[in-house]
Image 1 (cartoon, rainbow, N blue to C red):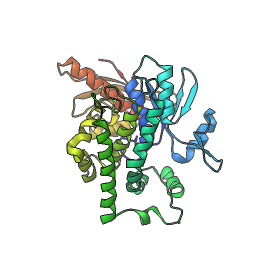
Image 2 (cartoon, one colour):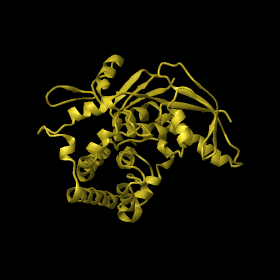
Image 3 (cartoon, rainbow, N blue to C red):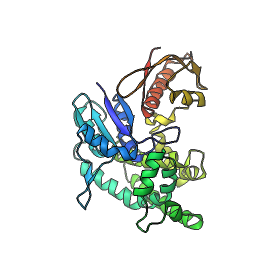
Image 4 (spheres, rainbow, N blue to C red):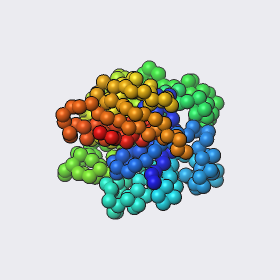
Length: 326
């Protein structure tokens, strides 16, 4: 049995974009747990909850239930968990032999860190993201978000988009917030994670929201290149620690990406030497693509092992399961 991660799709090539679902995805990747992705458009999330018998993820002040992603269904235990922090805690408890993300006694401190991160950085980042993010969603989710995320004044997202000096000033606030966070790290005696030597859920929060900016604006965008230069490249070095856990890091060719979205597969070779052979689509309930692949000969076993791991992560972000047969 495996775990199903429910995520929100998009028009962009990596598909996975939401920082909240990325926190859960990174938790699964870091723990090395097998999972498959099922994509759910925003207007269908409430129906999904009710179909699988999940409790609302939250209750609004008005008493109206909220239904949000991420959501996981662990088929081994039949547990259904929402909210990325709750998911990480569940995975810690259920799979104790994997990397812990909430070491004993750290849940309250990590919650405080997450709240501080929200206050000093995310509050300033959100106004920069809204319209760009919404435009990258598929039509059902875009229409839904244009209604639910519309300012109370009734104006459109286009009308409140920050431009020119106002946008530059907002980016300045985001940078200053991250400067404060980087300064917190300097107080650690050792290690380069929030809790020192060991990765924790707090690191997933930072990596997911910075990854959100990278995915939204594009890796080659001026905005992202500027982020990488903050604090003399400190954040670039910090994010490098997550390269092996980031599914979208796989340098797949355009042909590979095109075939990854089709029902019929054919042999192809991407620029990194991945040869895909004997491809067929399974008829499982989640329509997970099962692929047998073989790597081109490189004569480097360690390179091969790492590349296989990257392929597996790439498959998870695209709702595919790749089975190495090399």
